[in-house]
Length: 341
Image (cartoon, helix red, strand yellow):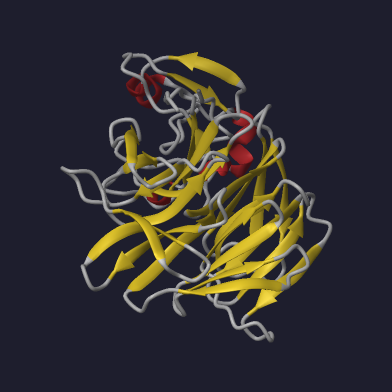
């Protein structure tokens, strides 16, 4: 596998294109619907109406009625367009031609057309309070949203069917942290209990893997060989690791970083059909690419390509070859083209 990092047009300010080395990067303005060729400095000083201080685009007069004006900082007034007033991104996934995003503390699932970048109607999950992750199943066209330590909601693609799918108060003991899907099988990472728990499409438990006490899991995926790969913190060695275990919990392979740079905190990973693993190294601001044996293939994206932002969530769409990267403190999801051999 080779990789390239090509900027993609912004998804209504939630998705942005990283600036190139050119002095005049292009920016898609969601409110004016035009492409502006000018430096960011020009936006700041010469554009009228005002400029969104987060996404740096001109705000049209039609957007004034929804314009947010936060409290001035050090005497400077900061304007935000309505599409930039969102909370931190805690989950991103794609189902067919729609991208879904959940934000911390919000009961809404944001939706965007992956082709036209049009913002679609939100899905509101009545009892959702603390969404921590979201994943989509292509075969069943269902979404699964993990509520931190509480439950998993199953949501139809259009939001017309919403069910409380798995709850810690049910007969199945689980405290969801993060989720992933392989075929129709849902894999739930229960960090506090140190379990990886797999369910079928009916919500029935298939298997449960007990991890060693010194492994604090963050996120897990099922490999093409039906083993489990997960990111975790090793409390014995005081280091972050990516490990592969079988259904008995026996460790098969591990990754701890490169020769020069140890792996940092990794909240999310993604995997393709060949077993290649994408690793979001939050502390180092990197995305690593590993092979099916968890050997380092290459540093896919470094802090420069990520514009010095920290990767928090990942979603890899194999049909399109696009990697969606949720950036925690930027309220942003970046999109990269990943070229396959």
